[in-house]
Image (cartoon, rainbow, N blue to C red; front, side, top):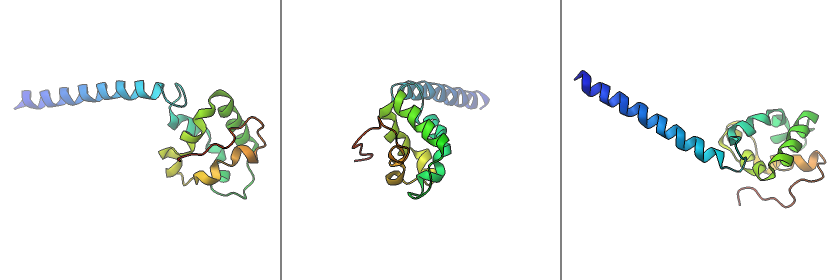
Length: 116
């Protein structure tokens, strides 16, 4: 009986390790490059007040983070705004996508449609 339980635990641990390798590999080839979307979304935490309210003033620190994200990985912006982490935080994508314009970022993605 003990050897059967050991076999199941070893199998479970191997499965989890193999799953982690596949998840890491898939994440490395994503829209945000080697940065996981969850980490990129967390880096925009300074924007929370502006992402839920179209009339809220966008904090300068938020504009700096968004500008940096657009410069390093412009294709990453929409996946970040549509990420599960963003949805859990109550972010409204239709409002969040207006932040680059509200920050007066010149080289922002124009006409970018998230989720369509």
